[in-house]
Length: 374
Image (cartoon, rainbow, N blue to C red; front, side, top):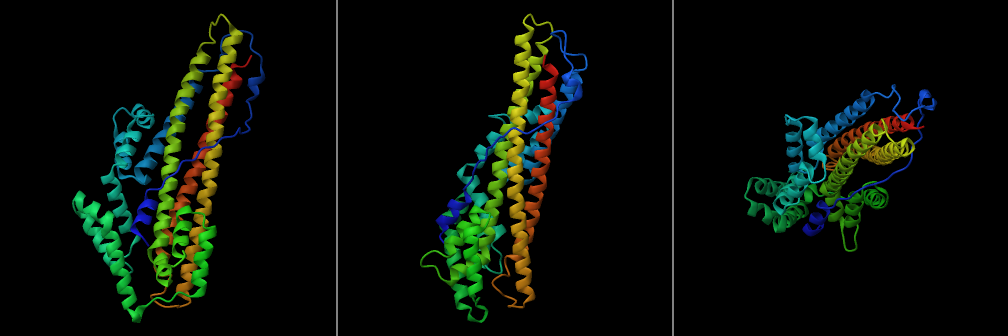
């Protein structure tokens, strides 16, 4: 497999957006007509404070997630610094805002040196010393080396070590891995139906015109788990980018709705002020509804991945139980498959929590809209 192909795959990333209206139920008191332009006494500032507090808490939880799981080390470090900032929620808000610490950390992560290091770290994670001893050793040396040595590994060192490993495997006739028809058929199925784009691409590469058994063996040895790692990184990058924008937008819309609602008090044109307040709260509700839908889609995607990797882990166990051989072709995918299943299950749970948060924001925004209605 060419070094250029994997470099290109390692740098792939995407974005996701979406939105719908989600049904909500207005509180019973919202139907009681008001007789003045002032906000009803039952509308307390503590409702707005509670909404802001919930939004701030979720933003902090989101930044904590970035600190633990964002693919870029620069973002993880920056997120931890934001969490430790003595200014608390204000620092979190600034970090997530356009042009803030999150954007700056992502910009640093796009630096060539940072991308090279991230690539080498991925190679270390996905190439075992048992299957790829030359690649693993060269990657570990490069990771401890200079910037120039890391660039050299990405440019040619990986491909050269990869060829040495392949030559050694082909020469080791005693432990030569046999590719059964069912193993090749499994790769063909992945190439068409795997939920991960990068895994599908890796499987297609293993079956490309001119590829042989050695390519299929390498797919099972490291191509599969590398594709899986890239799919997880892309998912985490996408949800991080999208949610940072959503939270910044939420803060802005809440501020606008609060200002519009406050303007109702003593307004000379009550009808106009009330209409502006209704529109402002509806904008918050619409934004929350769209965010909830996006997270439900992410939850479904994570569930599909978790189920897929659980199936892979089960297949690897079955292959081992069948005693196909201690050095069988499935040997290197069992443990990574179980780890990926755990990671995707965590993402599924997190997406469910995020969808619940945005549903709550939608309900609170609807309460605000009903509160200011005439």
